[in-house]
Length: 161
Image: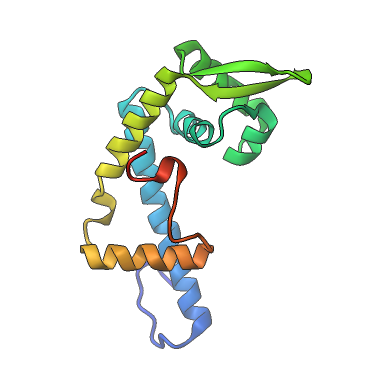
């Protein structure tokens, strides 16, 4: 199936699932570009913004757990952490019970930077320009259902966070 090609038989579950997969991957790329663009506007890489997001939701995260959470190899994560620490956006502190383990947290400056990033990114809904409000609400409901996500989302995704 080529991109954007409509199905001849929309009742063929496998074919519909294949097209949905393609469309989700296309939208995912748009959202990644959107995410990267807004991170760059604030002088961050997309990876740094992703790290701040994860730490905003779970302060005091050990480096290895953060690497797993954001999908980075721990050796690649270190350079991003170093840059964020040099900027004053995060701090590393030793784990009290095992000083070899470093716990990472967002500083007030990093929290403000992340809030500015998230506000700008979430207010720019150009990725969804072709959807009206009802369609966007339906898409949200369908994605929550497909992902098994509760109706209310908290953490840094909350509208007033």
